[in-house]
Image (cartoon, rainbow, N blue to C red):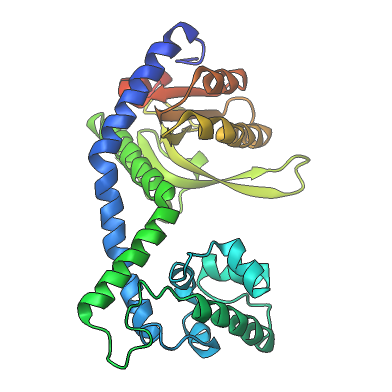
Length: 320
């Protein structure tokens, strides 16, 4: 049964309320989330500076021993280097740099000699471009003072946080959205199960729910499988043995542009789930933020319904 997708006369009002709710949350909680990450990243940067003897020793041996410091080193130059800029300047393997950035280690299929050759070129670029306005002790005989080290670490941490600001805010918002669902469900007697318990989504008992559950699905043609992560999986209390749980994806957005770029993601998930489990699959969205009529119309046309976070009680209309 449709809940919101078939009520376009309410969309404009809901959009305005959702934007207001997101903005209020952002002003109150986003700075706190950003600051807490910056504190931790500052500590990590200070550790990286120790590894490089406070930027006085940057060579292949250090990078070989501590590949995880590469993002810090990129932000330690003047100007700071994006991943692709470093790859171009050092003329190194794109696969190596991007793998190290993501996994904090070297590609397992790359031989040791090739790795040493590549990271030597990276080290030369970093050493040549190290920012003297940050590392004021470079070129001096005296060791750096603690205040100089902390100041340098804070500047680099700010650069790193600036590069990942959107994911930091998005993760904080998703955590809050899931907590909102949890509170709503537990007030109505639902019990949470963890993915670690090994219960398949289609074997959940009535009155239970789980977060971030992986659901197997078939790709087109059925010859290959894909794992679809779903934010919230809820089995209604009234469910029968043949019923599937209701699925929700937590979505937030701080502007209207990115939502329209991401809207196909939900459509792909819905198509894969339907091709595997049939048309009875209920895949819905929990929305908070900047979702305009174009986005809502696109999702509605694909049969994807939603709950606005400012009207969380609409969950009850899904039979939950």
